[in-house]
Length: 135
Image 1 (cartoon, rainbow, N blue to C red):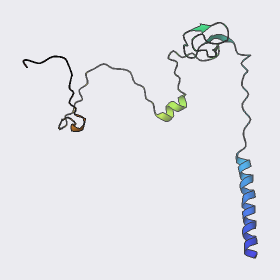
Image 2 (image 1 turned 45 degrees about the horizontal axis):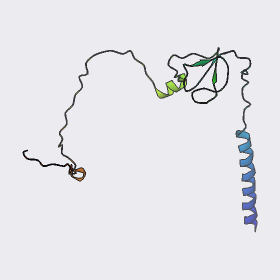
Image 3 (image 1 turned 180 degrees about the horizontal axis):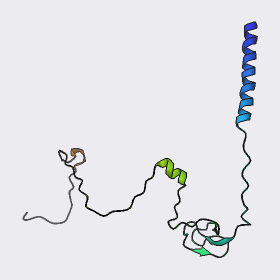
């Protein structure tokens, strides 16, 4: 009887400790205050599917019936439209180099047997009105 009470008591204590630890470590930090979009100056509105087309006011896109997206003055402009976070570039180990023009001298030869696949071989009979006199 004492053994069962000890097991039940240790299970209850373990549950309380794990619940307290979960609530302690799972606390959310309050989100950082961002500047509201009303304070930021909108340069123009554009369609995400056609970013080269600019509009003066918000609304629906005439091309895809999507909401237009604002382009703010304080956003970075990228010529290519693709931006990669520098930390991601570091983590991926991306290296850049200047382009050089020259001949490719790498070649290899491997021994091989080339043959057709007998299972995919098919005879096609073309039906046509007429006779073949000479081949």
